[in-house]
Length: 282
Image 1 (cartoon, rainbow, N blue to C red):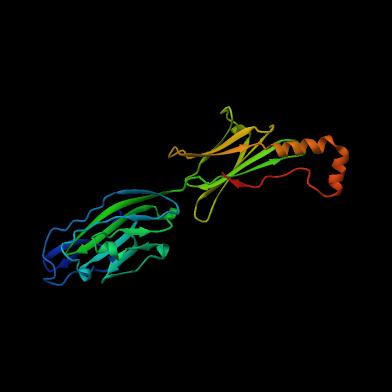
Image 2 (cartoon, rainbow, N blue to C red):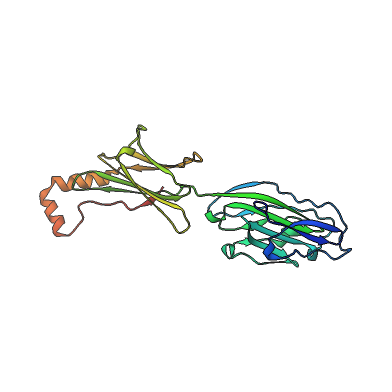
């Protein structure tokens, strides 16, 4: 067993080859005697590493030599990931697609006819990351290993501004999902760190994304500017949202405190004494 590709011998009309195929799947179909001339067979992978974003699409290319017209019945393409099947192409069609890739993995036939047995994956998941092996039998047999890495940037930051009428403090909240886990940093317009005044809660979604919510409680005045930054330590990437204390919210709070008669009227009418700005996207 070789990491990323399982190898077993098969016999062809012109001798013995090492065909990379899981033992549980049996022997790869091979061309009948005289169908193809014996020749050196080498496949190529333009890239050995793909780094893609969660939810995007990717085609992991794997090319093989085609002389003149492709003999489809003689071609076998097999893709596996971490020694588990993904999909195969046999007898001119795709079959045996793994359930975890159901409806998302394909081997476009129009590309195969051009000598590209690239694995196309849509709506990439975090679990799709790993070492893939492209194995092709076409007169000869060869394989290539290719690594897929998946990341999820924290580029969609939801934020909210809320004023506590009891303390006159502002509560600023930022929430985002991504992978891997990030550090949330708060700063003001002077680039001073405010992270010592924050709380952070973290959970994971069904797809293993990190759902991070950070809250800053602080005294502020109208038009003060604050920033929350989601910083991914491994990649150094960061994504920032800007929060500005609104005039209307502060003015409304002063109005309700300085006019007792009108305050009583507002209470009688069951009107709110403060407003909460809903979460909005950065």
